[in-house]
Length: 127
Image (cartoon, rainbow, N blue to C red; front, side):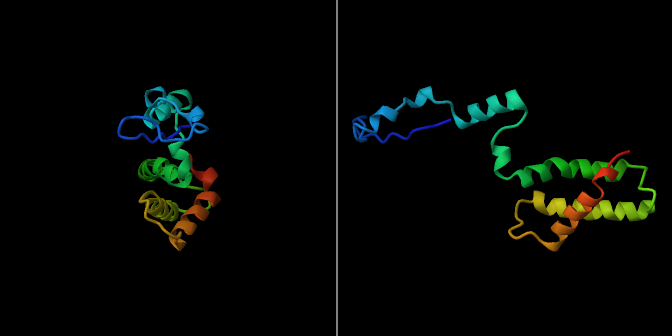
């Protein structure tokens, strides 16, 4: 989507050069950002705004699912106890909570630990 900004004088006439006027469009002809995003959500289930900080939106999506998995999961990997597994899940949750808070600045050791545990036990996240 390409939008053009048109600066108007008080009388409504454009103060753009004649060469720039070829790009001029009426504002009513352009979809609003929200209309554009709504169309994307309808067509593909998400919009471009989710891609700006994909790590953040992924954490927002994953965090409640990890918490529910931790709360309701009766299973654990065979090579560890339920308490060890719950501790690992808690570390993952802690790291993703920091990411989802959207105030991380520089990623912390806790975040890297959570991401490494998520990678290591990715295929263990099932019932």
